[in-house]
Length: 332
Image (tube, rainbow, N blue to C red; front, top):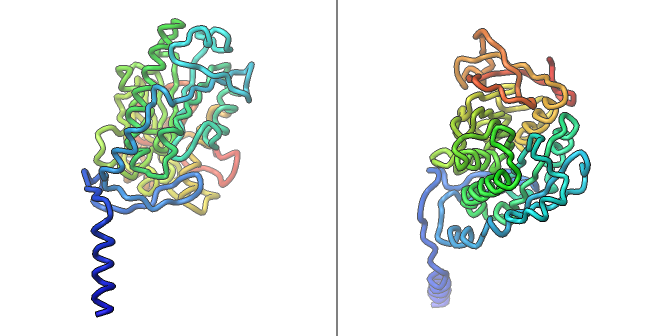
């Protein structure tokens, strides 16, 4: 009787748990590892009612924070606020310069390594406006599905911000370079397509894999005038197949020299971009397919520089290159 009582108590306890129905399945494989700044997290890729409810609490129009860095203020940002032309007027923003928009990934914020590496690299390479979008209110949840769901509305909100900035200052889309890493890689595409694909240059660094294979909001080549993707942990943390006008697969797209983890591979993409801004290195050889790039079997004629300050408008294809184990990473 005691055993029966214990079983009945267990059933009653389970029955008392709130019902949380599955709404959609982003991947046939329900549980996958996803990289955050603090290590790997095992996440559930089947969307439940509670995930939708959590995502609905994020308001990007109110909670996104825009930080301006220029050569006049390279380490301490100046705030920008959509709709506040007065605040904009007392910052160092200059519409005559090109503007770089940086979009971090899951569980990151304005102080993420992605921003800490790329802000000084861009300012060293060119006199630009660098605007770091802190969307940690949407990307900071340990619930990966909530952060994923927030990627689209946050991208739409950044597009609204750029539209307002252009209207207030006379800046134009061909003066922009949008760069996103991980979840921010897909978000960069969402920003671009909400600006009618007119942004001159969009770079997706290791766009996230988990939850994006059947997701219609993932990065696409038509999101900007010139779109480039750098894959450094393809098929694991990062998306494997080509997404942009040009896709680079350094070292086959996975297993970066000097790295001993998927986390390190995943981060290498923004280190490679940073170096390309100042050195112009990294010459890729054209490949017949992404499979050829990943197996390092590229025998086609033609080369192209990876990354860099200037969009390679009109170029397309898949490219492979090799790197060193440590900085300087470029062999060319």
